[in-house]
Structure formats: structure tokens, C-alpha cells
Length: 420
Image (tube, rainbow, N blue to C red; front, side, top):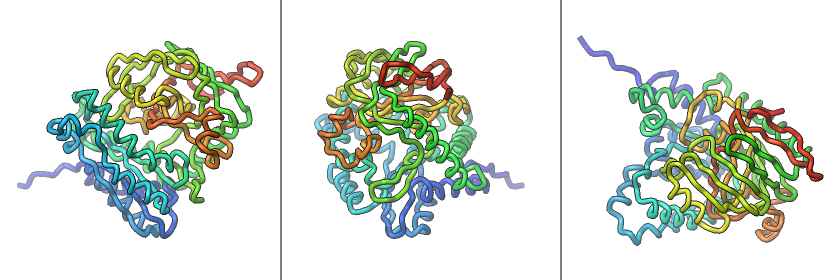
């Protein structure tokens, strides 16, 4: 009598169908790949099944070459276990220079997010900070091409055992991984019969929300809720964006999959008040919980966290711009990701469950003709400059948002986390 072999999330026909649909929307909707275009993909080794499906769809769409750069959590930890102290100020500059060169020559960028949210939580925060700073400096030339939307790019996610275990610690490993994958498929619309059509409809809805805000031309937003009384001034000539965008190379892409937000550029010098995070932030392998900060003149002058405060302090010390805002985003509390009730411990998902702000680099595409402005011109309009761009969540069903007009009047934008 032979023993029955239990199906795992990666062996069922239903799973394979949804994985293929996820790869399809990543290439067709997210990346907007052009025939003959190269693709540079980054992923962890645990994401290999999705990497192969995306590679297949990219070549079917006419990609000239797909190059994947893999990371491995175990190898990352070995650096902290055996690496000499001086080496934590080093980064593979040659690698990031190569990525920037690829983008400048016309390559598209696709990232698969699947990181262990607590990978570096037990490591020396000082070493983590130094390594992140070195990487950020080395990556800057490539990042600028992304933040200026000069290339078409997108980010999708893959379920991994360590991520699933972090999200569902009380479930058996197979059940936790299955539940994570189901959540990824639902949020990415890969569980629908025609995900490409579903993304087109959703994209139109996000653009409509952005258009309404652009018509208002608010001077600032006022967030009010438990522990939060924050006024975020908006950059001069700011633009609200949502969903997809046309990159500088002419390709239409949807940078984040999933995405439920509309976002714009704050004025780096016009943020005042206090704000409290409503979800934990997973930052470079460390969880930062219950963030509380106070802004004066656009700059964080006081910062605390119940967990991970040292990492938070090191993060905002990265450079001058790390203490200022580069993005403000509005997300309804009824978004599918929020409605799932899950805490993903992954910014790509959690930022689409709540309104959020981002410390660091601003997106020049969120300014009128921003991609044509010099760094000095961008700064004059209020756009922030930094080596980092870190989103963290400040919205919930208990947070209200007002739009402040140019004359100082207040208009309700959100009540109880929902659009008015």
C-alpha cells in the first residue's frame, strides 16, 4: 500500500495557473515590456518558480535578454557572522554601476519582493546601518533613473516559507505558505479569469482618484487620529499619481503590483506636527514598531519606536534628506489588502492597506515637468533628496484627512479612513 503524497502550494494545478497569470500581468501590465527590450530582474533564490515563469513570459513578449540577479538570506547572514568589521562600509559598486548602465541603455527593471521581514533583527544595528548606507550610496545612480521614471519598472511578490512563517507563526508550514500565496494572488488579481482586464479597470479607477485631487490643488493635507496631528504641505506644482504611468522611454508601466494608492510629493520644508505609525515597518530585515515622530519645519526633530528604535535612528541619520518626506499617499481603509485583515510585514503590501508617508527621496514625476527639471529646480519646488526612500503607514479607520486650500480653508478628503 503506497502512501498518499500531499499536494503543496507549488504542486497543485490551480497554483500553477495562478502563478502563470501573475507572471503574465507582471510582464504585460506591470512592466509594459517593449519587443526587443532587455530585462534586469532581482529576486531571492526562494522565488525561482516565479522567476522562471516571468522569464518565459518576457521572452514570449519579445524580450531580447532577461538577466536575473539572485540574493540568498543564508549568505547575507554569513556576512554578519564572519565578515570583518571594516567590510560593512563596502558595497558592490560595480554591480550597481552595471545596473545603471543597463537602464541607461534601455533595459527594464523588474523586482520580486519576498524578503524575510526579520532577517537582520538579531544582528548589530550599527553594522546593519553601515551596510545599508553603503548600498544606498552605490545604488544611487540606478535609483535616480527609477525615481525619475526614466525607465519602465515594476515590483511583484513571491511567497516564501520564511515570509509565510513570519506572517502565520501558528500555522503548519504548508498551510502558512498556501495562505500567503493565496493572499498574493488575490492582491495581484492573478486569481481572476482575466487579470489583464482586471488591472486595466483598476488602473482607470486609481487615475480617476488622482484626477479629482489634482483638480483641487490643495496646499496641504491634515492627518488627524490617535497620536497623529500632522500637516503635510504639498510641493509647488505637485501632481497626484496613481496606478500606471508613462516612463521617459515611452513605455506605460504599473510600478507596484499590488497598488491601491494615489500619491504625490510633499514640500520638504512644510511638514509640521506629530504622527504615529499604524502598522509595523519592515526595514532591511528589522521590524520597527509603533513609530512616533515630531516634525518641525519639515524635519524630524524627535523620533521614537517601541521596537527597533536604534534602527529607526540610524535610518534617519543616513543623510540630511532622510529626516524629511519624499512622498505622501492616500489609501482607503476598505482597500482589498486592508480588508484582508492581514499584516504582510512587507511594505509593498502593507503600504497599500493604509495612508502612508515616505522618508527620503521624492519622485520627480509627481511634479509638473519634474523629469525635465534640474536637482536645484526640484529642490526649489520642495522636492526632497536622499539616499533612502522608506514608506511607513499612518492611516487607519480612525484617521481623518482634510485638504487645506491655498486660502487656509479645510475640506474633508477622508473620514474614518474612507474617501468622502
